[in-house]
Length: 168
Length: 249
Image (cartoon, rainbow over all chains, first blue to last red; front, side, top):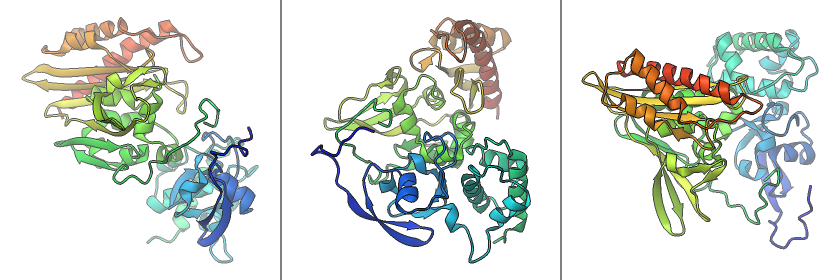
């Protein structure tokens, strides 16, 4: 990357607070940093993966105010006053989230690289539609690629988690 | 900016502008889509699915929920890709873009907004704040169709049609074509064949043939000129048939 540090017109760093997984985190934020960079490099939340960096694969998906977003294409500064959920924040107390449990039970994890993004997108899907059809799950996960091609088991796991999750 | 195609000294966020993310209107009053309204917001807006079906179809086929939740309708237009799936439906519906700048505001028909590949009529210091669409009117029907190598790929070509029928004849029709010229275009000769006439098999075929003569496609990794021309004929015919069928609903 080209060095821009010597330029006088460059934007200043600021101290910013991010609400990640229900807890405030204070970081020294450079305005050009992506949310993915802040999560991984500054907050050590490495569950969120860097896949393609261009918005194709969905590995970097996090939830911003409950909506799935590509953290590799999101400037961190735009997520400042919003609630961010990463895979680390899904666990409820000591137990696993029903989606995490179902992914293990159904063998929906192969290399695991797509898994955090898959689970978070699935969570957003189930929050909006607690009782989806297989077709709706496929459509909902269309923005997440699994290069092990383990889609069948992933879809089975999401369907199973939908059964297990408490209905409001 | 990531690819260093542009290296601006200063970037101004418009996120905080009041009302800029809103979608407003319905099938009677017309539609207004603010500059920050996402594709997902448009797809979920009930009136778009009901009254502006071609636009809905142009957005709904995009697979990634994440992309649709982040990308905006106006952002798609401002990139001015000749293969945009959002531009042809909005052109077919008579969409207009409102631009604000230091010199004041102005409005352009969307088809005049595109000047070429990635080129728009936006001047320095201007930004699009709204794209508006007039109400479709009774007896209207629209359709959008596309061809692509895979579900996630850019269109080889796409077609959007808006048709209004009355007294058994075509009162108005607009046919917009994407990825078949340096910018999204209208097939005006094809439209002329239908306007004021009965719309039936042979005339639809003649319009599709005429549309084929109004395009300037290229051969690239996605398709050849010949294939694109043949498929233009097919997709224009099918889109007209689909739109016609929907005028009766």
